[in-house]
Image 1 (cartoon, rainbow, N blue to C red):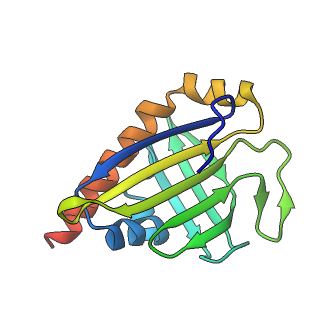
Image 2: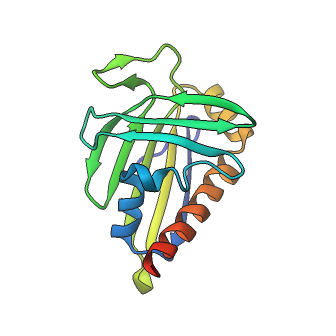
Image 3: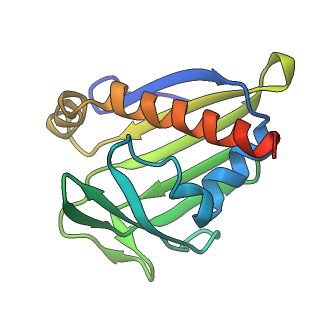
Length: 157
């Protein structure tokens, strides 16, 4: 993938959980609520219609404040790639102030794990810088850790 360092943020990590399980966690609302924001914040609701143009709507509770986030899927390659954005809501309704497009890439890793890449694409270098300053690497890294721990818990149950 061709990344633009002026507008894109990205990191790659190897997770212990197998790729099909990481995919299931990212595409199933009851799983998304368990990992998608760094604790102590939480996802209070998630609604997914897993198709291009389908909704990826979440509600977060951050420091006692409820934050709604409506988005759509732009690309879905089963077990490999999810692309979603808050630039539109379902029905291709444009958002007044979109923040980013997220790209989640999954590949098999040695030992049965998953090579996990998270990319955040922004409209401007200022938006990218703001996201980095908000803690993109720490926050999305924590989400990856929470995802892996949660998925591994599913393996053992």
